[in-house]
Length: 339
Ligand code: ACO
Image 1 (tube, rainbow, N blue to C red):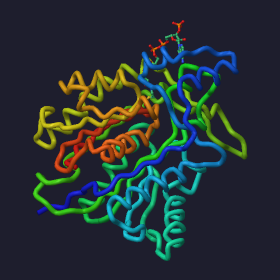
Image 2 (image 1 turned 180 degrees about the vertical axis):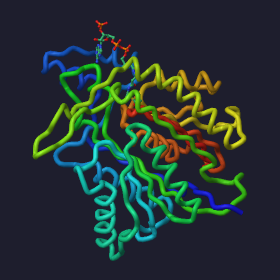
Image 3 (image 1 turned 135 degrees about the vertical axis):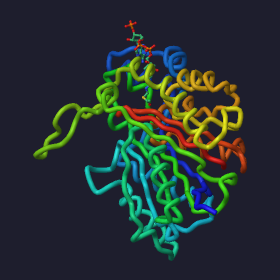
C-alpha cells in the first residue's frame, strides 16, 4: 500500500462586487476607450467578473475559501499541517500570503474557542495561472512522502489590482477570487480516490509575453506594475502545451481521454478550452466552464471551477477529473484526480 493524496473538501470565494461586460463598457468609456459585450463574449466567453473593493486582500478571499473547504472536509483549522497558497497578487512583498492566511485561520478558530494551524509550514507558490496545478503537485508530493497528512491548497488572486484600465486588450479578461481544497493522506492501491498523476513544466524563454514588469527598490516602484500580455502569442503556446500535458498525465496514470469524466481547465478563455476539448475528443458537456461568470482569476480559476462543479452536483465521488492550467512564465501543467 502506498500513500496517496485525496481531495476531501473544496471551497471558494468571490468578492461581492460583480461587473458585467456592460459595466466594463461604461468603465472604459469614461476613459475614452471602446469595447462591447459582443467583442468580449465572442473572443473570450466572458460575461462578468468580480472585483474586490476597499482593502480586501488575496488572503481575505483565501481565508473564506479555506474555511469553506475545511467545513466540506469535516476538518478543523488546527488539523491542517501544510498550507500552500498559489498567488501572483500577494498581500505584500513578504511575509507570504500563506502565513497571513495561517494567522487569519488561527484568529477565526479562536473566535470559536479553537486553534489555528500554527506551526504548520506555510508558503506561497508563484506560477501565475498554473499556480494551483503547481501547488497541488507540491502538496501531493509532500503527502506521498509522509511529510504532511492534511494540506490546505489554495489559489487566491486580486488581479484587479494589477490591471491597466487604459489597456482594453487585457483589463476585460480578468477577475478576482479564490478557491481551496483540503488534500489528505489516504492509503490505497492507486485505483481509489486521490491524485493519480501530475505533470508541470516551464519555459522561461517566454517570460515577456505575459508579465507584470515592475518591482520595488529603495522605497520606489521600478518598472510598470501592470499586466502586459501578447494575447496571440499566449493563445498559440497555450493550445499546444495543454494537449501535450493532458496526454502525459493520462499516460502516467495508464488511462486514456475516454476515461475522463470532467475536464476542469484554467478559465482563461472559452476558445482555448474548446480547442483543448476538441483535441482530447471531449464534448463541451464534460468541460467545467465558469469563465463566463468569473473571467480569468489566474491561480484561483481551477479550484473555483472545481468547487462550483462539486457544489452544483456535477462532480461526483469516483469520477475522473483532469485539471489543467497554463500561464505566465511560461508555465503549464495538469493533474489527474479521482474525486
Ligand atoms: N474591445 C474591443 N476591441 C478590442 C478589445 C476590446 N476589449 N481588445 C482588443 N480589441 C481590438 C484590437 O484593438 C484589434 O483591433 P484592430 O483589428 O482594429 O487592430 C482587434 O480587437 C483584434 O485584436 P487582437 O488582439 O488581434 O484580438 P484577438 O482575436 O487575438 O483576441 C485575445 C484577443 C482575446 C486576448 C486573444 O488573443 C486571446 O484569447 N489570447 C489568449 C490569451 C488569454 O486568454 N490570456 C489570458 C491570460 S493568459 C492565461 O491565463 C494563460
